[in-house]
Image (cartoon, rainbow, N blue to C red; front, side, top):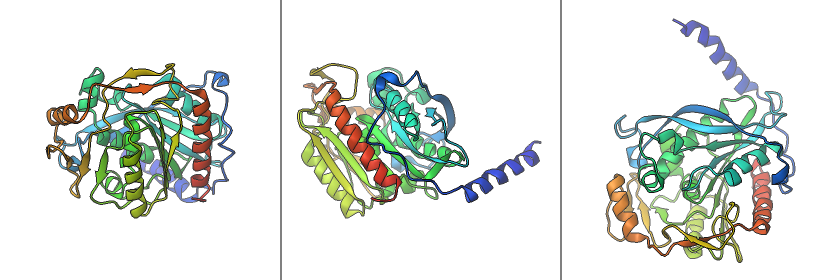
Length: 348
């Protein structure tokens, strides 16, 4: 039995959490390191306990409906992070194509260079037993599973003495941006981290605004939604409705539309080029019990088959335009940096 030997370690971690020194204001996050001069900084692969509910309704029901999962992520720590100098952090959620070197891993390295820890979650990699291939992953690995990894990641970071657990933001891209928005509502946080911390801020990069809650209570953390005017998968009017829901729920929320920008302006593909299916017309409702329902067919999204039916009906094959734009990326970096500085410094 090794339990007696583990007790001092638990006490030490608890003591460290209680006496963790106050964190200084973060450095200027509006001036970002050049992507070409990151000196090959890479993240450390880490795992931590999570779970895989299909929707919020399944959370905690049983191991069959909400099976345990080992989350996978890449952890980027600033060189000066320590128990004496705990740093803020950002949890990053990838898009439908998974983790991209030009996007999630680059942001992770840039944040670390600026003195902010980053945890890049690989929700698909943790669930290879469920699905492989682009379409099957999107049908079997849901936004709620991604959020389960995100909130488990928040707990993981909060246990690290090098990280200030009160200053951890959530940032997602496209598919991960949907999760980021959903995670800003209190119903999500109460289900996935009932007695734990909340994210200090939420940033959604070009996440389709396709799901709304009956219960519009927000966690209270500030929310920033970013999109391009030429991105057909993001409907600005519906994003505005979600912003109003969040404001009604008690959060500061803002929607920024970059004129002339396409989807994935921070990717590696020059544009414009057409890809994928367009989800802009999908309209999902999350009720007070966590059931996700399509408002057109009234079908519940209760498994991969019905998820396929619902998304097949509400999406079209016309696709949407993507295209790298370094000028827009510089602008969004500045806007995100200023937003996170306010959130981390308690100015929001």
